[in-house]
Length: 310
Length: 305
Image (cartoon, rainbow over all chains, first blue to last red; front, side, top):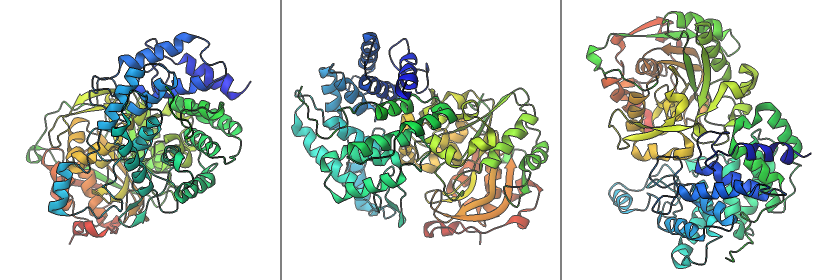
């Protein structure tokens, strides 16, 4: 049996909580992010959801935890919306359910502006001048991790991925300008030489070091721009980095991204088996889900070529 | 219980603090024995308790100069177990790199402490609960914090001695940013920057104070820290049960004036001692390990005149 069948699938199925969600570790309190990755991973497996209740309960849990403003919180009890909202939209959309809920999430995304560029920021900039410690163009805005803070690469990438699958009920007029602005922001934030870190390509004149996770999400988000030299340069960096990184999460994400862009990375399974033997992925549900996604037949949710039809 | 219930005490009514400086030429020396001797001076109340070691694991660190060295972490773990701690766990929530396993594998932590599953907690993805901040230096009022931190009986801040391009220096107080979970607030934990680095250092350390601090100054980092600076051998471990006094002593070792470091000067009002005359130095004198650290231009005013 494969690692996917022998380890990933039983782990993810067994670690679902009674309430339908997943925690960051098996049977910890349910949280939105691990629930979304688990749903997306299980949906991609052969013979997905032998027990339909796994999917139903997971979707129900997500729906129950949507905030009144249409967003989702990153942890129970947090009433302010957060970066996990596009992931919830992606996961629910992939199941082909809850269009109304996804639409409300998308509308929230359209209205969720980061802190930079707001009136207070503009006033401060006018009074005290531009911050010279970072190089990036702060007028290019994406999405933030938490309400009212700065744009960063990963939440912006997640939002762009979700925007590829906008339900027809949502008016694109509000979302299209944001998509273009966010893509420009990602390109502006690329590290010199290719790849992305969290979103500071240059601080005090020193070039930022790219990281696998942000690079993968930015590349997948920019998938429709795959002819751009920035994308090619970043794929080259990711290809070089692949294999040096000893984190199973990074390795899995790098593999699925390289494959998505038609590169041929070294086989993933032997390395994943070795890394699992070392630390059991530290019991992290998202890492197991990413490994499952990378090892299973490709799914549509991160592909640039797929447009919404529903 | 990690949440502070002690009354905040103005500096003038606090008894003097003690800080130990231990000389260690490199990471190959018997650090556990050295720390045993140092900790004996303080007799930390850890018997039967759960101790959380909070190192600074912030980057993939190909040159071994960004993170608290795993030899120091392992030695501290061994020493607290020898002092009778029931359990010693290592917890960190890296601010910039989400793939914590990549970091701990890159620094070979497993070679020093054995299987990670039972000994290491990724604080970024731990279960959380809301905590009202005890002070109002920032506007945050409340943060969701990891249960492993809140449930620990005794917290040890275990940073690397480094300069920092936003805060001047990063030592045991700033190191507590790592308890704020990325799964709630992102990578980086940008909410803390928007609310003010100095202010958040004060709020975090007044709410979840570390009970003890051990600073890895065997090889520190100067210049564009916390991740892009240069190695600075200093050959010292600095420890004590007053984190403000430990950080102030480290600053003096680094050739800086602690009262010019904004967050340290403010922390000294209620959280510990900054003034040299209020800190009893044990072990090596500061002068024997003083090693001026380079600073980026915007922080050169921190240098002791």
